[in-house]
Image (cartoon, rainbow, N blue to C red):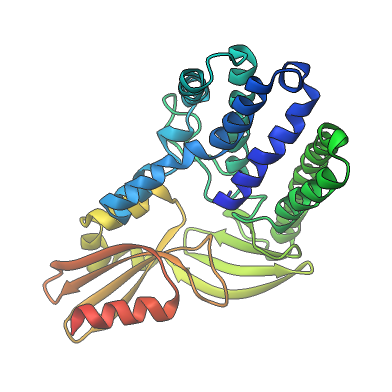
Length: 325
């Protein structure tokens, strides 16, 4: 999820912690648990610092080992140790347990969007993504804001308020799974092609992205109110273009392809040679694919520029033109 959602969930978990007598009866533990839930809800995303080393490094590492199985214990251990130095009178066990819950929920809920995580490391480096929640889910975020308002009105009931909120979120995620499965079955029946079908969420509740991959092509579209609207197609033969094959030698392209199995290329002939755009077809809006990798090659298929990242269509065109000029 996004940083803002993780933050409100950290504060919400502190509200839930008011059901724990060890927290409510000890001022030092109250402080430590507040810090533990907020920090624990954010700390797996500390790998965002990889941005300082470039987008390729960031894409290879974000939501990787920091969201893995060992970190379920390492992060709470480090948080508890740090807080013990600041608040030596706190209840160590309960601080650790609440920080563990915060870290667990962060890593667990990140599995439900399309980006996913490498949560199974070191057992597997595969990306795990359940494709049922958008990176920013308005319902989950708004539910927390409503909980904070009720907390302000009835402070003595905040534990029960957030218990109800988190049970509601669990039911909401189950509903999104049910909705996704129904749409997947509907798409398979309507399209009636053999291949891999993927349905991913968007910001809007009743709009989902659809990807149908066959040996000949990948078709991309939207499901709006249970109707399929096709928006693009990617012939598999483009994968055999010499410029596409050579583009895979660039580090930004390799980073892109290590992250997604939904990458498809488009090749454009340019005065200087070729432009190869690798697009992650899971993410598209109005025929634009904001997550991409690009390689510029001369007429001899030699790479002289490559980039990976998130951009609007206008930003991409401007960046490419600036480099060429």
